[in-house]
Length: 182
Image (cartoon, rainbow, N blue to C red; front, side, top):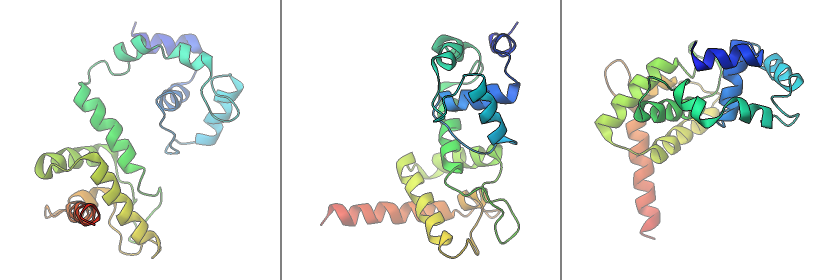
């Protein structure tokens, strides 16, 4: 039996509870889950999370580092794991809303991950610049109630292959050069 499945059965957690708890264990706290608040309450009542939503020793024991390496990331390369975590962080810069254009601001994980991988191989910007560029973009449009803002996947590359993210990254890089020359 797969180690991860065995852990879920023995812990008496639902698969959704297990995945949300795994995210908490790895420092990722997002509200993308259906019935997120009720899952948190269940995890608190089962003593996997404290009232302040920090993980308990029971959680740490459940997600022993060796078990995590064997089960959860079993078939993923280190590069893919890093890209997945970076993609999650990137997606969370965008608000979990429907834009005035009628599309979800965040977009789908698979699409965003694929486009980010292509973006990095094309432009070579580091994650620090990419995150700053996305934050600048979203903050600028937030002041306008997100009117005319592109959603996350189209911000990276639109259907014509043009990248607003690349323009934003160039701006961040240029501003850093100007600051360092002062």
